[in-house]
Length: 495
Image (cartoon, rainbow, N blue to C red):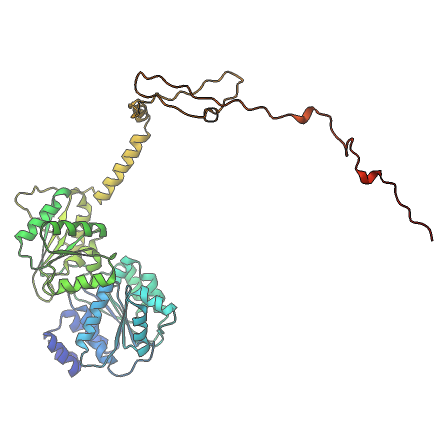
């Protein structure tokens, strides 16, 4: 089957031909006719299968007739990340270049004023992340009552990022008579519940088992000690035919550390993670797409939906905490019919996480050995070992400091300033203790060994306060009689 058989308009077919595509992918072949008919769609497909075009192409034809009004978009596409939203906007511009459709991108890190001006001119296709869309809605800059097509893309990623409450709130602002297209790479129970709530009599489309890796990706697993992972990664980059590669870390801090390490060894590497300003993220990603950067060290912000043409390798420097993330990471390569290569570097304490990944994909990941680097074995009982080791180490230090035996050892340690141990004053029975800090005006400390010790000067004792309780009690004015009482009273004369 080719695109001519899917009932698309001649203008759209011309745009598809200009991009170099001739044959639709399985999900495009199944989804495009259903979307054209106006039915709701529940799509489950792995990354790199052409999900974006499966809803973008029929949407362009459906929106070709009609005109958008100010601040009232005609369609809404929700994306979990800024990078994915930017990529979807580029797809609409590429496929809709022969149509006069207006698009707007609402993402964080960009100017509110520019986005508001686009909304004021009218928008046919609105592509947004949930947070920025709600910000503009609460400011009264956008109305969602005219949305006729809703697309929720990468729903499982939105679940992982905590966007589901925002998505539910946004759907509550939309009209009930609409077409909803719901796409997800995995289908956990929470996503299934959302699909049941948002969709009406949907057509289910699944072109691959949920969370299955791309068939064209050759996978390998390397288990080494944590201190050998950087050497292993550099050896792989040098020995493999790496044209360009994504290197994934679990934490943003590790992304920066690994990028600096690779740069110090003369490798062309850049970093990409969520703490970077949006203009810097966009610039770095464009440079990587244009082959100006060979290695991109990234967090999972880059693991969803990014279409890097001809990406040859993916390296998982850290084993992902969630097994589904492994599928999305390696799905950046092996796209559009090209072969891909992925390596996952694991430590012995990653045993449980590796086992969870292998259960999810339904097969064991083949091991890979490197000459000169000692291989290690996975510990099936360990889980997230780096964090647990640090926690146990900190707890052991606290227990070590609190133990009575070590408290005695601390008391026996030599004092740095050779001060004698402090001796508490002894008090006779019935004697009130006094505060030496008030008695001594100047505190002196012993000097070198054998030097005389000066006696501190003492303050003179304070005089006791007078006790007036023994004096006779005074009633009234006492012996003093005020002058006004001594005057004779004046009597008014009778008339």
